[in-house]
Length: 464
Ligand SMILES: NC(=O)c1ccc[n+]([C@@H]2O[C@H](COP(=O)([O-])OP(=O)(O)OC[C@H]3O[C@@H](n4cnc5c(N)ncnc54)[C@H](O)[C@@H]3O)[C@@H](O)[C@H]2O)c1
Ligand SMILES: O=c1ccn([C@@H]2O[C@H](COP(=O)(O)OP(=O)(O)O[C@H]3O[C@H](CO)[C@@H](O)[C@H](O)[C@H]3O)[C@@H](O)[C@H]2O)c(=O)[nH]1
Image (cartoon, rainbow, N blue to C red; front, side, top):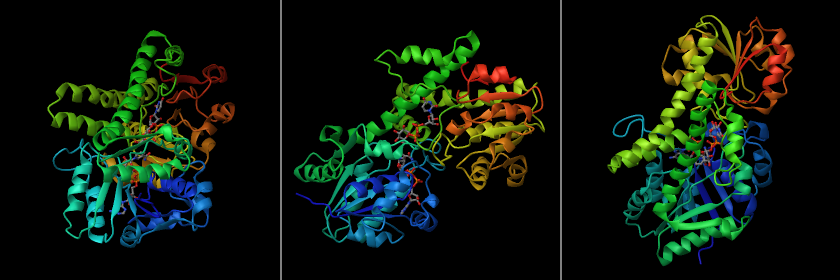
């Protein structure tokens, strides 16, 4: 029976950091070292001041504090940590390819391959290698080939253990996971490796929530779960446009359908469009896999989820322009929120970026307030699109650390992220400081429509 004493996790990002912090805090006898090539990130993970952790995630500082320096370590010494480990998690980024074959669709596996090669180069003892990153089906086979051709007599077992945490609720998702999925080889050695990983999760999760499958099912289940979740958002967003055209209310429709136990109430919030580092990337990857296999109808079916999401972001921006008398040129538009959802500082694929880009094309002046996102990040997000010069982005999109200052003198307020604190703002005070007519475009449906209208706002909500 393989007993794990030492874990190394390659990649100290949104997944590697929180996941290993929870594994370490629940398994005090296992030494867990999280390594990364990004020195700044590792420095932040080791910062004495826990408010400086590189990731904003409720509950994370407490878990890190519990284990860090005892059995949880963050380091840039990648080779040493790999060499010492019985089990190595690969938790590096797998973004959409931006070049070559599959550009704009396939997952870029170069970071994963580099990890496999590094493990192969450094290992002198047998190891279980765990795919934590989200990967296309059959990637484990590629990793296995790289690892088994080293010729140094070291044995490797490859497991797929996709992560299902959502940002903003990562700690509770990890501590009370609906399920943990472990895919492994159907052989005595494979079973033993699976069991070693099961034992780690069993430290805090009931065994019936730990599901074991073959490797390919595990890899495909991760992509499928995200595709189904994103599909729900695009489905309700499609209905939101229909609601706006007919006088139905998308909140009421979502409640009515969600009470059907076959549909269920979760993930039915109409919005300005889903963002985040996973949904779009994983669906594009699924579409690419289907296309590569000649499954045209399957590919088209899932691609529609992305098409609908792009449409939702566009039409929100267009609604702002058309409502403001067809011009936002030189008008101040206040953005409340930049993160892709509340309770995270992550902005990857955030709808706010695309809405801002469209409004900047229309020569708007945007001011943003987000409680956790830094201005440098916002500028990076915009510059990445290459729609205009960095100087122009800097001049036309500014930030403020205060929501009231953000909204002062604004022609319109656009709510892009559902931060709880936005609900508690003094909306009368905000109204008093705006030129009239004053507009709110609630892209998250978080404000009380009647109250806003009574104050005097022209209030537009998605699906209302
Ligand atoms: N973010 C999420 O909520 C989430 C949830 C579930 C699954 N996933 C998947 O998990 C994986 C990681 O996502 P993330 O959001 O944590 O990414 P991330 O970009 O936040 O972190 C990845 C880290 O890996 C590091 N890295 C890359 N190559 C390396 C190497 N060769 N050696 C050492 N470090 C290296 C990077 O410097 C980076 O800090 C992705 O495949 C993603 O799809 C993400
Ligand atoms: O009813 C809803 C639910 C979500 N969203 C949006 O959808 C996006 C994604 O939200 P969420 O799924 O909560 O966050 P992620 O951190 O992206 O988590 C998803 O992606 C992760 C990475 O693969 C998976 O591990 C998680 O299970 C999966 O929920 C965000 O922009 C949300 O605002 C909506 O617009 N309406």
